[in-house]
Image 1 (cartoon, one colour):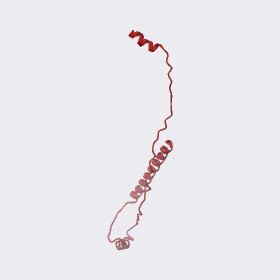
Image 2: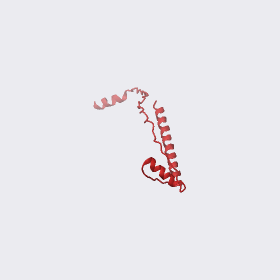
Image 3: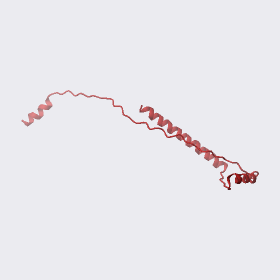
Image 4: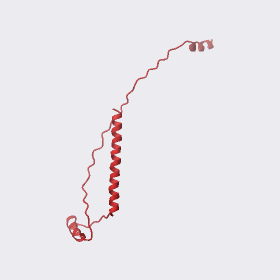
Length: 104
C-alpha cells in the first residue's frame, strides 16, 4: 500500500510553470562630495643675486625667516605627482558616473 501511494504521485503528469519577473534593484545614489577648495600658494624664485633683498622683504612682510628648498628636478616631480593625482581622480569620477547611469 505504501508503495502504491508513493508511486501514485509520480505517475500523474504535472505541469511545471516557470515565471520570470524582472526585478529592478534600487541602489541609492549618494551625493558627490563637495568641491575641493584649495588655498593660494606663493612660490618665490630666489638666487644668489636677489637673496639679500628677498630676505629683507620677506622678514618685513612675514615677521620671520623660513626656507623650503626644492631642486628643479624635485619641483618637476612634484608637478608630475599632481598631474598623476588629477588623472586618477578624473578616472574615478568617470567610473562613478558610469555606475550612477547604470543603476538608473
